[in-house]
Image 1 (cartoon, helix red, strand yellow):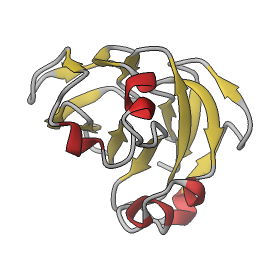
Image 2: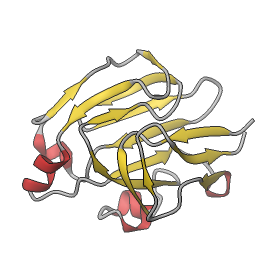
Image 3: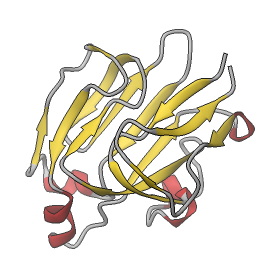
Length: 150
């Protein structure tokens, strides 16, 4: 059964190849897409367990399925958590749409960093991940973004 990966943020879909970080742009951690965000709440893209949590990024592991990485901005680790407020704990069980992090993309941009949010299916075969929302599409947080073959 295919897995629907939902957008963690509202904004405009951007090709992952356009993310200004080669780790994401070249698919080194897995296939996916990205969203240029508006709004302050990042939601879980899938049902699962929060297996890794940083203020600027988190990984949600789907039971019997892949793990999905949500990265809030590029190089935002340099902000040392400033402007990010975590709403869950590592090890928490979450449902798609549950709040993960409150943050301010405008403050990220003001700090000279890209606020674009890569959404990546970790260690997935590229041919198993399909775009549901094409580049240039405006999505609301919680709307389908990717589909992963089951």
